[in-house]
Image (tube, rainbow, N blue to C red; front, side, top):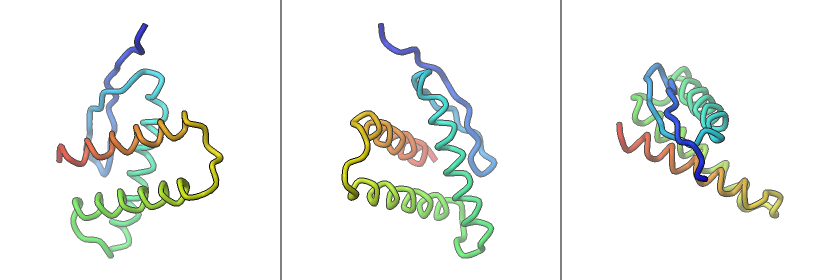
Length: 99
């Protein structure tokens, strides 16, 4: 039996996004959106980055850099974690492409 797909409503920088995901991924997706929102708001509030698109790109770059740093460390994550991170990156990229 395949996992049940649901639609999750996420709010990032005051904008709502409907994202389809498997029901067991909902919690991680919500946490990921919260982390992205926090990073984007921090950048916006610093006044160093101008428009929302640039803020989104810089936040994505920061998160990607963190992920690459983790990937370059000795393996401590199971394949499941790697798949989870890869899935989150894909979802973030999909949201950014739809803007």
